[in-house]
Amino acid sequence: MFFSKHLSKVKNFLGHGYAKTKDLLGHGYAKGKEFLGRINEGYGHAKQIYNVVSPLLDKYLPGNASHKIKDAVSKGMNKYENLREKVIDNHDHIRDHVQKHATGYIKM
Image 1 (tube, one colour):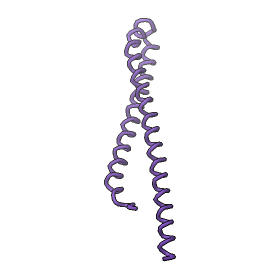
Image 2 (cartoon, helix red, strand yellow):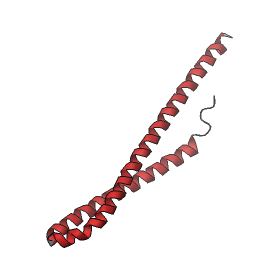
Image 3 (cartoon, one colour):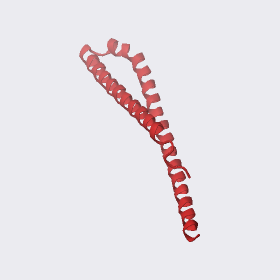
Image 4 (cartoon, one colour):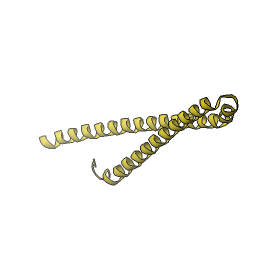
């Protein structure tokens, strides 16, 4: 009787801790995904603006300056796209791992 009473309290304590941790991680995940989505949205807008402004660079800047700006923008865009792909790949890998291994671990 004594043991089962305390075991029930421990079980409730652990269940509460698990629920709070799960909520905290879920909230952090949602906010992080929202933040990265806004960065990606800003990148999309910047890319559209650059596509509109790019012909003006060719027209009004000397050839060398226009070429340097285009090279720098192109490198930056490639780096962003590579980083974005890595983030998406890691997200998918973690999601698949969690879905595969998380079911059935804690049942209270």
